[in-house]
Image (cartoon, rainbow over all chains, first blue to last red; front, side, top):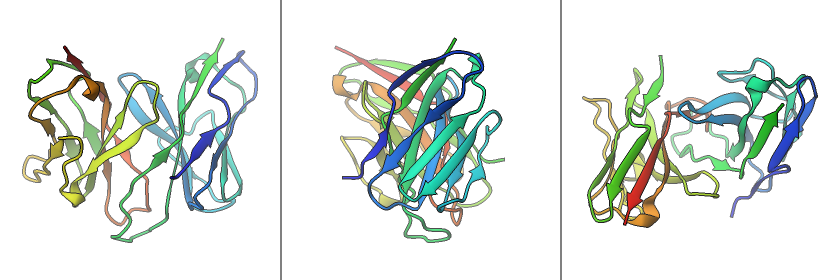
Amino acid sequence: DVKVTQSSRYLVKRTGEKVFLECVQDMDHENMFWYRQDPGLGLRLIYFSYDVKMKEKGDIPEGYSVSREKKERFSLILESASTNQTSMYLCASTLSGTGDPGNTGELFFGEGSRLTVL
Amino acid sequence: AQRVTQPEKLLSVFKGAPVELKCNYSYSGSPELFWYVQYSRQRLQLLLRHISRESIKGFTADLNKGETSFHLKKPFAQEEDSAMYYCALCPLYNQGGKLIFGQGTELSVKP
């Protein structure tokens, strides 16, 4: 089974603090993603990465950055946390397949990291 | 613009009743469509994909290109179906896995 592990299930931080959310996958997937999950808004893509040291902005990248130094690890960084970043953060991974009809597009998700910024 | 819309935030039915969770999409090409489910205290997981034309846990979904819809249906709901359901779109020939999700529908099946 694919395993995507997010290091922190629950975090409470103060406004202005730097926050690191770690994600590790054990299936040698090329593609990794960070989503934010909010009631009524669904999942919104923050950043994604198709390769080591590669990153691309998603739909809501403001206030976030990412790091991918190793294939299995994708970190989300909040440089200066704000209260509107209180949310559930989901990491996901999948095999690559640019333009590949065989890529089913299935994402494998972590359990989520619930961040509260006071 | 590419968009997925789930018009119902909450759907409440009684056990044994039919269920239909609505999903409409906006995309100019031929997308791949998925339903993901999140049970209480569990991670989000794939329920079914349109390309497989399969029935999972009694659920089916038919892609209607004319109406740009991909509604999820089950003839007889069970209490264990209570969960959060997300419809998602993957544009063909886009880089793998970059899904666009709808807002989600919470399904509550009452005894």
